[in-house]
Length: 144
Image (cartoon, rainbow, N blue to C red; front, side, top):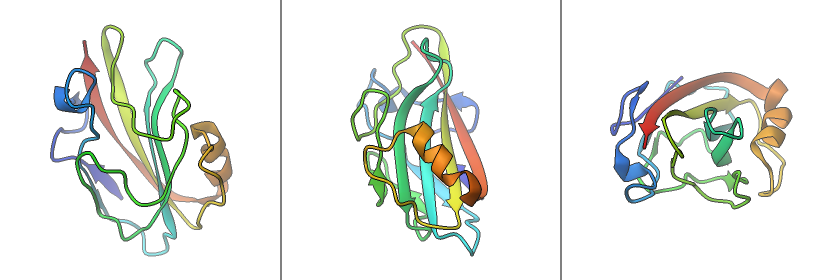
């Protein structure tokens, strides 16, 4: 399974358009090679380089495995969980200083996830631990 973006390459800079210095919208994402036995997908965007140690920008789960593209500025169908700000939405990258890594992690799961929209990244990861078929990631870099 692979997650890519037509807007940036793995380990390359995110265009400012997708950050707090631009339009603050999510970048377009493409998904390929989803295993046939996948029942749902989960997507997490986080910044492991944040001063707090980890800033969660986006949590979405129960994404149908038929989803092969997430359009620019759109949230995929599914349940949107809580980000670090406590909201159920995409939060654009906005590092306080220096270059940060923004990691889009995609999980193929063997089941749907029975969790509420108040679910955080850590709660989701705990719940799916024994249900991950495969996972992949796309890292974008951004500096201010």
